[in-house]
Image 1 (tube, rainbow over the protein chains, first blue to last red):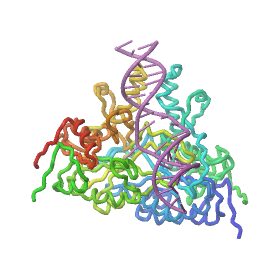
Image 2 (image 1 turned 180 degrees about the vertical axis):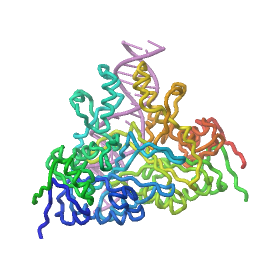
Image 3 (image 1 turned 180 degrees about the horizontal axis):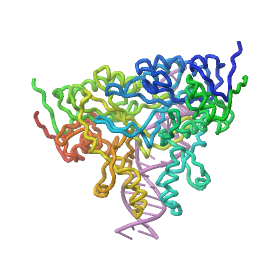
Image 4 (image 1 turned 135 degrees about the horizontal axis):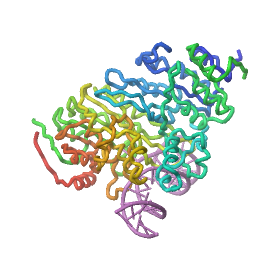
Length: 278
Length: 278
DNA sequence: GTTCCGCATGAATCGATAG
DNA sequence: ACTATCGATTCATGCGGAA
């Protein structure tokens, strides 16, 4: 039976099941922030940390199958604290995914500049998350020029004509790799970024829990795909990844088990249900 | 046989052997940056990544024994790239150390603002390292007030008259949590830091190559110890940890297998060989 | 005394070449 | 085939000398 791929749509269903109907090697970039262990119970059912790896492995197996050989999988994840310790399910997951055939190419750090407030006697606020990069082969697409940033303070301090306000505003843009007035940068020296991304979390009070800021998938989409490529988010939630893909003229596929989230995502994307054959 | 502890000294020898002669529960804080896998071949012999875990476990076993129940172990480490992938020895080490009885309390990120330059087709510059916090029990000493930092907005609003150079210097102090002119901060709002530390590596030191900047051990020493406590670095190298401990009025013990590094460290510390019984 | 600029210096990584 | 060595690439920082 010929398998079908629904492009530019948000599909309601369990990721493992939905992905099983996708053909092989059809996705250019997977970027997702899966439900964290034992959190968001109301919407996803709450996977216990001890069960997290065995829950995720069937999905990552499908992801490996549907990803093109030169594609990339970016997994946003962070381990919970349990009994005063960081749980080990994330690092166990890395080891198990490598056994499935994934290459663990890199670990980016997402530094959340405005992380959740709070105070505990034995731990500071958690202001970073992992962005694990997995690949199917060592030869994957990467367009580094798309995410270049202005050089650091060393160079900026020698640009006398900039006002302090301008400089501050520009610095805040450095993290995302691109602002709305890129023209300001055209005459500035540019450098390649590092594997630490400085991005503030979006604290919008929508009906859904915002997993990550739009700038995050946008950055990886520009880095790892061409226009017209297919971007998949197997836990699309409110559709941030899909929206970033659409804005960047990429095709998107979102999958989520929660029908209400799917509706919210479709509204944000301004689409009904479209189907296309490949 | 009663075991002896040499306080305020740099001991030349293999860590596992030297530590075996320490009494139980005598160290308040261990902070170290062990030789990274397959690097610094000339001075340490170069441990192959595949052998790293089995090489380190006997040492971590001794460290667990000599650490006080309310003490802390901070391990600075980062995995190498091998065959296009991040090697897994660090995350395997975490799992194995937990089997030894260590609690993996937290993972701090050291964001190296001035990381090594370079360009590759499939990877950006690596600008962060892990600072793994291990403990013997859930009830460890922690003095959060000692590392509070000024809140973010002050630079823009209150210090407009400062030159860019001055401001840059002040900002660089923020990462360490304390500068030489703390008086400047006294009237500013202070906040607790997060688990991301922004520190530049010290790159222009002539005689010795320090693994990490002095501000790094200084920060953890203030956070996890009282004055008079004993700080151990089982891979002391040029003695940066010991120097930070001495400046903070803590006792120190450094161990290094390289006699020349031991001499450099002793010179920096301004000591010969002192022995003290406990 | 400031400010500005030049320069050396890194816990790096890849791909090609040589044994 | 598999390992060891080498050249090319690249940029934030702090120091020292100059304006």
